[in-house]
Structure formats: structure tokens, C-alpha cells
Length: 166
Image (cartoon, rainbow, N blue to C red):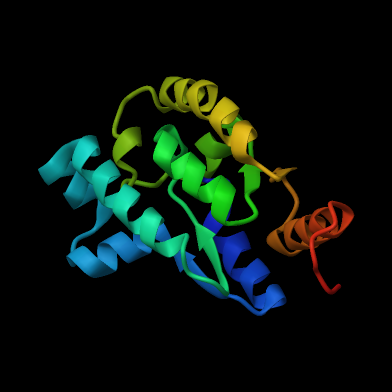
């Protein structure tokens, strides 16, 4: 959450000549409702089921760069699909940066709480090992700008032997 998946993803897709897709935006587009409304009406369980279906479909497409929701790795099926159907780049960040980046954000259902820091710490503890399990590449998105992060990812892909033209 708030690691730069959408911003960096769009830029990276452009550099690689891929179509950018985002599971959250796909869910919103197909349902005609935003994520907070889906959480309110169906709860996290209903949202995660929609996310599972979209992820299962989109991971079979070629020529795309897919940004997933932060919690998508919590389901084993999603991790299996991501790992076996593509190259997974884990955009890691600190809780402090997440807090800063989400300070004014009212749209994130899991952060509708008085103690955002505690929630973010708990999510990081739960999700980081799952991301690490499936990640081909791990990049820390700290204070560097998005352009710099795209360069770092492209170089990391190249260093790992993935076909990337720089």
C-alpha cells in the first residue's frame, strides 16, 4: 500500500512497451463502484473474491504490466498465479513513508481507523513474507522519484537476466 505501484507501474509499462492494468481499477470499472463502496457493501471478503477473479483472468493476458492491490498476496491462489504467470516486482516501502503518503487519503478502507500506523505495521508483518515468497525482484521505494525507481527496476530486471532493452 502506497508503495508507488500505480505511478511506477504506468511509467515502467511505458518503458517496456506494455499495456498497464491495475486490479483495483479493473474491479471498479467492471462493477461501476469504487473500492470503499465495495468494502462497505461486501466487506473485505467480497472484495477479495472479486480481486481473485480479476487476478486469475488478467494474469493469463500477455503484453501487460499488472499492478495488484496490496492484499492480493494474502490468497495462495493469487500468489501461485502471479508467480507462475509473470515476473513479480515487489515494491517495498517503510511504514513511515506509507503513513506520509496516505496522510490525507480517505479512500483506503483498511486505513479507516484512528491508529493507521498500527494497521500498516500489522499489514507489513503479514504481507512482506508473502511478497518475498513470490518476488523475482525486490526494490525499496524510498525517497527517490518515480523515474529513478523505474531505472532501478529496469536495471534489476536486466541484472537478473530478463529480456529488457535499456
